[in-house]
Length: 203
Image (cartoon, rainbow, N blue to C red; front, side, top):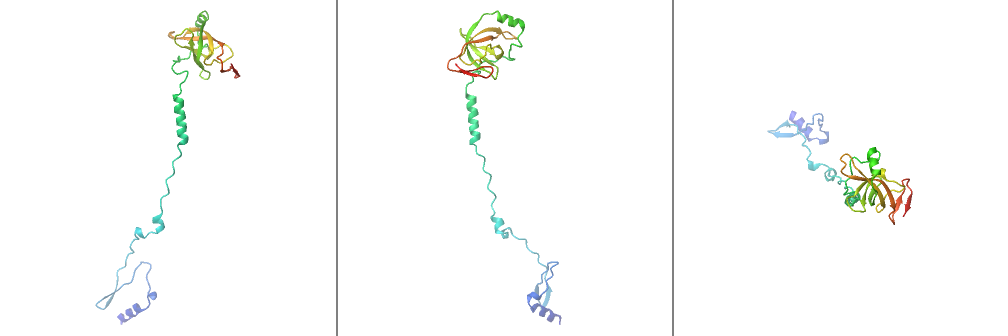
């Protein structure tokens, strides 16, 4: 009698067979010697990576960001290198340290310089922003250091200007000389000169 009921239940359409969902069991019919047994629950196999959606597998990583253009930086670097290679008028001359100025000069040194002879020379270079330059003596010899505080007159010296000056020893060792009481006697022709007030004139 029990076998007939089970057989009738199994022969009904599969849609009518109740499936326990809470524990995920699955009915399985095994025939062994005419008996019916409940099969062990089957565990659902994990999905293979190959069964993942094609979109997820075929998605490609975003392209790497493009490096910035180096033309600007290269141009700035080349400009800086060219600037470093360009000769500077002040390069090659030793600037005294600390700078000997008229304010720091002793009274006795000022008196000795004022009583000394007058020399002639040509302005080799002068930088107003740095506040110093050099004079090439007319009779030869090493260049003479020139500080902005010792320039007389209304014009800023430029290369090629003829000047007169007196000399004063540079402390503390008093081994080198600097030009004092510098006066421009002839402006270099064909150059622009600037007054200390900022007015530009052509010579």
